Amino acid sequence: MQENCIFCQIIRGEIPSFNVWEDEDTFAFMDINPVHDGHVLIIPKEHADDVFTVSAAASGAVMRTAQRVARSVRAVVQPDGLNLVQCNGAAAAQSVLHFHVHVLPRKKNDNLALNWGLQPGDMDHIGALAKCIRADLEAN
Image 1 (cartoon, rainbow, N blue to C red):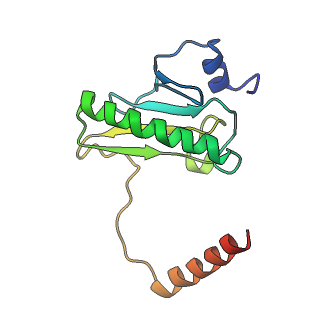
Image 2: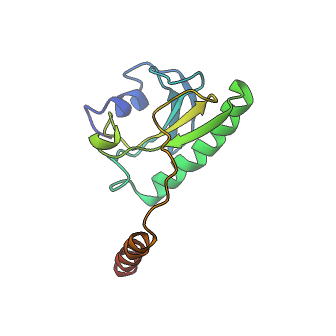
């Protein structure tokens, strides 16, 4: 854990939180700036800044907890839908440099700027990008 990371401080109990779940690997707590009722954050107890540095074990544990929490949020809040959101870097709206997943209940027509319009892309360009990404995955 890092000394000055707000999420690490929450895990250590130095900053109060409305926790909803904790196990050996993860910690889940209410977002104090919620988009809608039931907005929960899931974090690994292992500090990692983002998806590029988190271990496979920690990210897997976060997703297991996110699925469990999402089921409970759906049962309690009964949203019209639910997003799992994970952001990396300032341009992607990551505000805390500790890997985390938002369990984000949604309301129909809530106009949350998370959705994008569906517009068909250039299939040749998409295919070329897929080929390059596949080659990089196979090389690494």
